[in-house]
Image 1: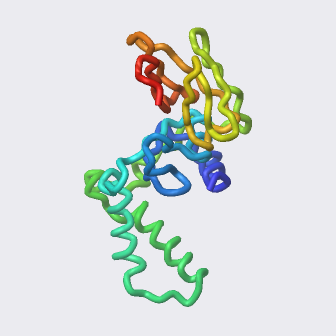
Image 2: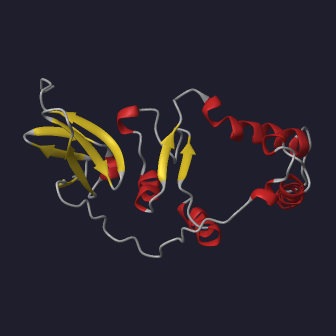
Image 3: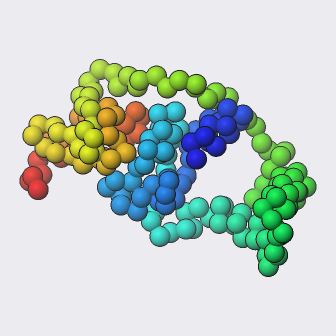
Amino acid sequence: MQAALTAIFRCHGLPQRMLMDNGSPWGSSDAAHRHTWLSLWLVELGIAVSHGRPHHPQTQGKDERFHRTLVAEVIGRRAFADLAECQRRFDDWRVVFNTQRPHEALDLATPATRYRPSERCFPEKIEPFDYGPGAIVRRVDEGGWLSFRNRPIKLGRAFAYRCIALRPTDQEGCFDVMFCTHKVGALDLCEATP
């Protein structure tokens, strides 16, 4: 998946944000440990990551609508001779879908008329993130845990060996847990320890 995304990002640039479901490899329905190594890589690239609510496919309604159209116009009840034939049908349909078929959501324009590549280039090397002044930086252990003021915080194994920052909030004893620019948790030192 990372190799495919890298090729897409090199060709088209980086998006500002990606909305994803909670299935592998994008995330987990466990809201406390939602991130995967793939979603953290996206955040390191400067892409904001949003997860839909678990068990609510309508959050990705445009994607669901795309799948419905793909099934109706290409797949249906057809049997393909082999994978190569299936790919040819998909490739032919992609041209129609993007350059010929009008879309209601685009005021009957085609996607190709609206497409613009991103101005944000794919970085061939990800530089370490600088959390700046005021950040309390901690390294997550191999099990996905870190400790702060004698409080264990479980972030999940995807964070293993990565640096995160704790930033004080306006509320006394409360901290935002940050990975790059993305808030991945919160800590309230006033709560009773588990």
